[in-house]
Amino acid sequence: VMYDGSGVATGRTNSKGSFNVTFAVPESPHGARQVTAEDTAGNDATAIFTMESDRPDVPELISPPDESRVGLVSRVRPTFEWSEVSDESGVRYSLQIASSANVTTAGFVEPVLSKQGLVGTNYTLNATEALPNGTYYWIVQAIDGADNESGWTAARSFRAGLLPLWAFILAIVVIVAAIGTLVYFFVFRKRIHYY
Image 1 (cartoon, rainbow, N blue to C red):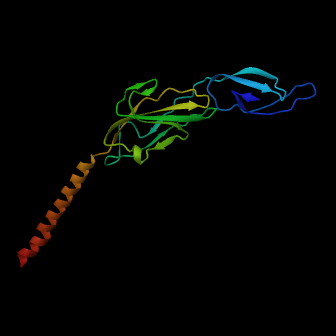
Image 2: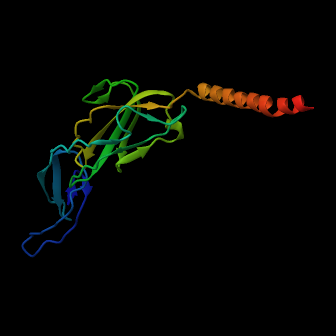
Image 3: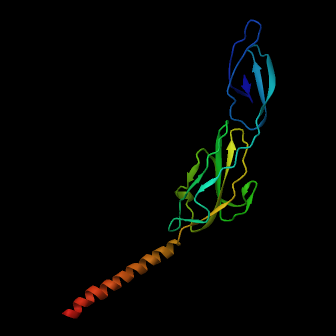
């Protein structure tokens, strides 16, 4: 037995030429799929199987919360988390991040990052995907095993980094200089005064 051209099961006919074969339908796009039974003599019969086209539910965004701040300095690697969506055919997810909240039915108009085929309900950016200081928006979509897509979630925003890296270094230099000045005035200058 072939499903869309790929072998999925074998069986033997009885004395009257009848057979019964059961197989799990492979993951495939929704719509009409061709199922063909063929014997060793080359005789075949074809039928159409219709894969379901029900869209999965839209996931709910969990973390980072809307309008939150993530990380102290730039090159931030946040973890994104959303609710699980269930479907008998299995579910995978798409995540998009953008610097503008301009969302269409296809996702963000100009995504900074687009990840497809995520099987879990969270994703942490790797070192090459780390985000510089700025405001970002994120959305998620569920796709079932028949390629039925949920709608995208509403966009949530977050701010990456409290300070740009140069401002963070400058703040540390100023703090160290202030501590050095205080130590000089309260320790060394006092000693010099008593001698």
